[in-house]
Image 1 (cartoon, rainbow, N blue to C red):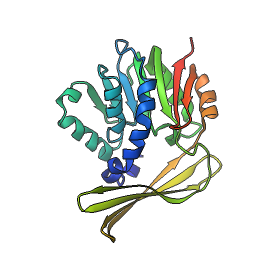
Image 2 (image 1 turned 120 degrees about the vertical axis):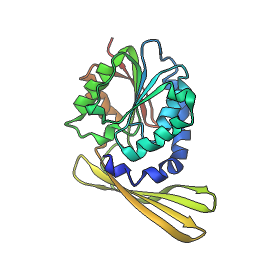
Image 3 (image 1 turned 30 degrees about the vertical axis):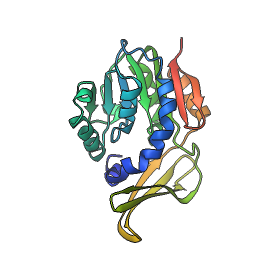
Length: 242
């Protein structure tokens, strides 16, 4: 997975701006009652730190542990911290994969945006049990469904574009099923000056989609309950069984 994101890291933040704007209000609401006295907030698959910054703003008194295995993505995250002394004192960045990380216990919350689909059905029980083990008794886990939540063809489309200086950037995506359980996303990033193509980079990510009902069933076996869901953003909020 780390190598898959090496090509995307250059463009990730420019392309993700609309996404961040769309999920921020819902994520903030789902973290509104987090008791930071219990423990830190765990940000799984922190990427370039966009989700980490959302958590830092939503829960301004929380300590945050960000887990990100991809060096290229992590470099951007650490660059954010380098210029923000206030955040450097609050945020710890762990350079390992989620299931290879010694996680803290009694976390006040766990956030996993764009993560669950990277684990196949055979591995997800380990993920759910690790999430449940990390949460304190009254903690909450916010997990994002990776659209479309099922295996289907997704024709190529331009999903976003952005400008920086004299250049225009476009992000294109398409998905092709691999088998009944998984598909491959083909992400293409193009850089233009006027109408002249300067650069084209392609990244591929294999994912195992699952919808809210399936994730709710899987999480129950680990002692978690789906407490709320936001269909517009695909964010699901889980709590521990009482």
